Length: 390
Image (cartoon, rainbow, N blue to C red):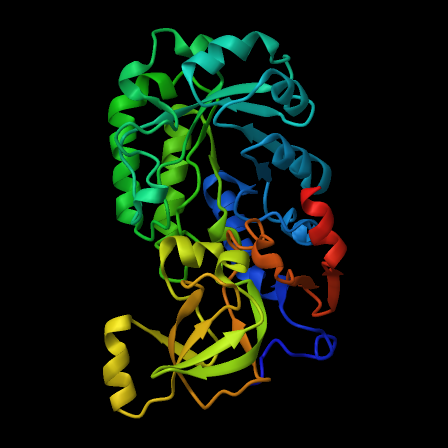
């Protein structure tokens, strides 16, 4: 199977490899920039989702900076991206906070206890924020439901003390995961205003977090911009968005090679990568990643597809994990060992989560710039594996 990504410069590269493509990223970047122009809302890249910094020179033309979840991410954003550096952590220790304050211009605390403990350590040139938990949000998965009952993420509205505005400059809410509905998001803001209008009027900035799929083709982008501008104007706030997946959706591929074809009643392709090792979210959230030249089908559809004579394969990784399964697919044509397969949308939460389980070869990272020039950025060796642990 020939990949559309297999252009000159990649033909001799050994798989597996990730290919990060600025040409494919451009549409999302342009929409992010458009939102800032139309609404005034600035976007900061969520490094927890995507930290492949070979693209940062390109991305900083469209985004205001980065937001982090740890000291290392904050430092990476400061050193490699520039612009605004927002720092957040579920919990800081003394040394991490001291180090983080060297790199950020906004520090966001997760709890009132951390705010009380560390607010006096924050220098005058760093803005202080607090994460709130509105108890209202959107997620299809319990694993990513930040506003669930007993959530440790942020301070509940009914726990906010009087005079909070004297301690902080802004608040951050992260209440969405893959929310594709503008009407749902707008209703969240309506609810937020009903419960928090008094505080918002006394703050300087408001971060609405990530998980809002506003760079999709079918998203109500104009309504989104107008709603954000209205919110900003009403309360005289700088509004921030923290797109992760929305920044890099459809921008990157994982290219693999079929090593074996096993048929124990269901033709199964074994590729030179793994789900747990290289596309961990596929395993966690149990979905089949998009695959070039193939259509994913559900388990209950297998028997019918096979009976109809369709070209069906289960695609699996080569780790010893029984559940190392990318998915079941109907292909456009027959596949054999030696063919390459291309998973077409793997930027978000893949490279940041890759690991050395089973000692499987780590995919290289390749970069295609906006001019179409492709280069190998990083290759991983046995020594990388060896030195990772001790």
